[in-house]
Amino acid sequence: MDRRRFIRQGALSAGALVISGHSPFKQYPLKKPEVIVIGAGLAGLAAAYQLKKEGCAVTVIESRSRIGGRVFSHRISNDLVIELGGEWVGNSHKRMQELCAAFGLELENNQMDTHLIYKNTYQKPGAWDYSDDWNKKFKKILEAYPHLKEADKRQLDRYDWWRFLVNNGCSGRDLDIRELLDSTDFGESIRHVSAFAALAEYAESSEKNEMDLKIKGGNARLADKLREQIGAANIYCNHHVSKVVQKNSVEVMCSNGKRFSGDRLICAIPTFSVQKINWDPGLPAHLSAAINALQYARINKHALHFKERFWKDEAFDLVSDQSPHYFYHATKNQASAEGVLIAYSIGDKAASNANQSDRFLANDVYRCLESHFGNISSLLKGQANYYWGNDAYSYGAYALYGIGQWFELMPELKKKFLHTYFAGEHLADWQGFMEGAINTGEAAADAVMG
Image (cartoon, rainbow, N blue to C red; front, side, top):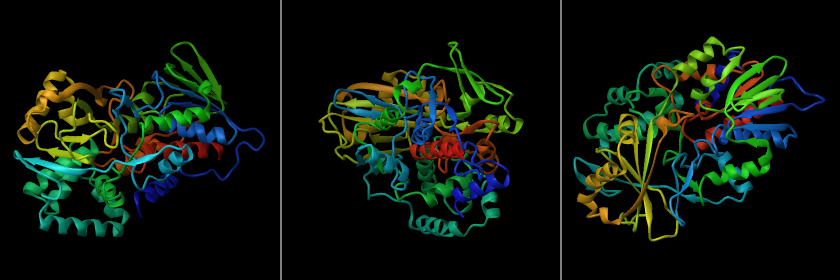
């Protein structure tokens, strides 16, 4: 049983109305519900789009001045667009692919071939690997995953991924590189990540761990297409929800004095923002506890715009044991002599880098790369930086399920609360992907319709 089936069945047994399920009763035989959606990220937009197709009146309320949420495409020059937020569409992300096809959005290959700098030795793709011994051990671990019983999975959830690797014979250089790469995936040290959450992601994802595709022209184009279908007049940006009252219906109040009323509410925002709303009646104790326990990954994206692509390889990414520890070519497939590398840092490194000047961060990059690629400082044209750990609405890039949390928190976070249904990547099968936001938004809309 994979995570998708387990979470659905676990939520049903707890009496929850799960995001992927349908009520056996039609609640609106004569009149379709009027629905308010809080949040114009992909989860909220996907929910609103689904409801609009069903003929429902929909209002979307968004605190930011833009739509897209944590999908944040940034034009760094006239020719080049980079992603300061959600980056990849995976080969197994079927709903993202279907929506892109329906809206005429082209998906381009965005797979990378990883270079390595370890103990100041540089190696190209194909010239480095884990030891044969560890590769054989990890292959057996992945092959055993489909046969794990529920009790086995719950046991794995009780300790961290680093400990799991050590217990299964990963050590020395293998462990060092594994920790660098895997911590990049989760946005915090793997010493804080549930061993089950990590193993399940690696066992169920594509060969490149879903780092496969990207929307040509910027991922925010999908948000724009969804807005066109929903109707721009139905989306209110710069409206910060301050209070939600649930009685026979729902009333949403904004800090600017605007009020919106509806039959049902879909709350598609990060847990940090959920908690900032004054709920009347108040959130259930179990839900508040789950919100308080869930952390979000601290990720800093430092984009460096160079006059030429000195790295030569279009599919360039690189992991190093320095700070920052991950680089990737952010303008792959974009026709230009110029290019952008994103220096990507996580956790404590990200928090530290966010406090530094552009000059300091650039010098960090030079120190890491110049001994292997020559003088690159003269090629730098400009920089852009975004630290998700200080984002006013999420205080992190994506949800991080820690030790003992996967089977305890998620079922609580998914439960319907009076007239309110929840959505967002924190409720998805895998955290940190646009596919998860879309899936949970559409499923919440299905649940509203019953």
